[in-house]
Each structure stands twice: as structure tokens, then as C-alpha cells.
Amino acid sequence: MTASPRRWLIHALAPLVAAAMFVAPATPASAEPGGSSSTATEQDEDATLNEVIESTNRRFVAAKNAVAKSTKTQSQLASQIKAAEARRNQLIPEVDRIAKEQYMTGDVSTLSYLLSSSDSGDFFNKAVSLEEINRLHDTKLRELNAVITEIAESKARMDAEVKQQQQDMSVMKKQKESADKALALVGGKSVTKGFVVADSPEAAPAPRNSSGGFSPEGCTEEDPLNGGCVTKRTLHMYKQVKKAGFDMFVNCYRPGGPYEHPKGRACDWSLQKSGFSVYDTDKEFKYGNDLMAFLVRNADNLGIYYVIWNKQIWFPASGWKAYHGVSAHTDHVHVSML
Image (cartoon, rainbow, N blue to C red; front, side, top):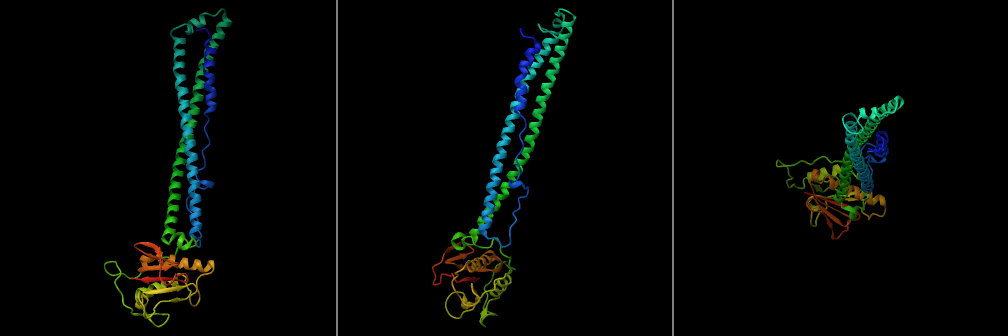
């Protein structure tokens, strides 16, 4: 060996010192966009579906971006750990080899190295340099191992963070899908333009038969509006709609004609305090949307046959379709009962 052991080792360890500085652990990203750890959506009871859909879309995109960013950092930390471990593993055999040569065999054995001293001062200096070499070995290995441990701890925290963010993103995705389904249930943009309350009150269930269904009913109950008659189920629906706060003009029983009105199984819910008039304000349009949404969302509880509103008709089994009847139903919401 032409170079002294000390110079050779310092030269060999120089890249490792730089490597230890290079692989300093990264700072983990925040778990929740906006710095919040909560995944619950605070929702105003009067929020429209448009507002809910926009909010859930924004939160889903933010959660998705957070996962992408943290996953990238996670991958970088894994690469840094791998690189640092490779450098450490490369150093260990060199340390073992030099130590073995120093203490057992070869030109740089401890004894021959020390005996080759020209005088007592040179002997002392060589002894000190051997100690420095061993101390340099230990120090740099400890430093490199400490860096690996620190990066590994950072990656473990990042792994947990990414897992939480993925769970948050899953929640956001479900909320987004739920809002989209809620809009589709009430006719989508074509019926409501999204200008409809996000949630409706839950109606009390109408009585069912022993098999769990709705048996045909006769027009046996007095219509509270015009002295006609309605079925028990229709009267129950009427009371539940009123209880939910829809207090504009309504007409149920109507003598003569086809369909359900003469049978006491239908009601027309106006947008006005009296009579019927096509909506010409946002408030009237939203009233019709919210009323329709209440009926559709509670169709199973109330035993509803179909609902007509704003040129569209809804059946529980088939959903929404264009309606081409005599009335466009832009001045009232029609509901027919089973």
C-alpha cells in the first residue's frame, strides 16, 4: 500500500460524509388538506346540492393531491434509505479488511507498522494515527447508521400519514359519490339545476300490510281541502308534507277525469299561496324542487306511485323521464299514491 492508512481511509470516507448530509430526512407533509385532521363535512341544513357537490369535489381533489404529494415523498425516503444502507454496507467490508490487515497480516499490520518507526516520536505518532483510524471508522459508521435510523423513522411516520390520507381520500370520494347520487335521485341538473336542498326531513312511514307492502285503498277519508275524499295513505302523505314545512296551496281530490285524483290518490302542490302559477322567481323554483325532493326521498316511507315536476316524471322503479302530458307541471308538483 503506497498511501498511509490514515490518508487512504479519510479519502475513502469523504463521499460517505457527504452522503450522510445528502440523505437527511425530509419533513412529512400534512395529513389533511388545509391542516385539519377531520374528514367530516360541515353542512348547512339549508345547503343546496350544488353547494354540497362543489364542496365535496374540492375536498376530494385536495385529498387526492395530498396523497400524491406524500406518496412521492414516501418514495424519496425509501430511495434515501436504500442508498444510505448501500453506502454503509459498502463501507463495512473495507473497515473489516483494513482492521484485519492492521492486526493480523500484511504490510500494514499493527506490529510492523509500529516497529518501522524511526524514533520514539514517530512510534507515538503512528500509534495515535491507528487510534484515529479506528475512531474515524466508528464515528462515520455511527453517523451513517444514525442517518439511516432517522430516515427510517421519518418514512414510518410518512407511511402512517399516507395511509391516513388514503382513508381521507376514500371518505371524500364516497361523499362526492353520495352527493352525485343525491342529485341524480331528484332529477339531476335537468330537473333542479342543482338548486335543491341537500337533505330532506324524514317522513313517518305509512302503515303497511302484513307482507310489508301497500294494499289498494278506497277513497274513505274526508279531503281536508274541499270536502271530497282521499285514501288513508294520501291523507298521511298530505299531513307529512305539511309537517315538513310545505304550506302553499294544495289540491287533492278532483271529481271526474282519469288517473288518481278522482280516486283520492293524488295531490297537486302549488308554488303559490292560492291558485296555480308558473314559477318566475328562484324562490318559487327552489320551493318546487325542495317539495319534489321531499316526496322522492320519502317515496318508500309514504307509498308513492310517481311524482311529476318541471316537465319530468319519476317512478321509484325507473327513475326520471321526460313528461309530455297536457301540463308541463312548472306551476305545481304532482304526487300520486299507490
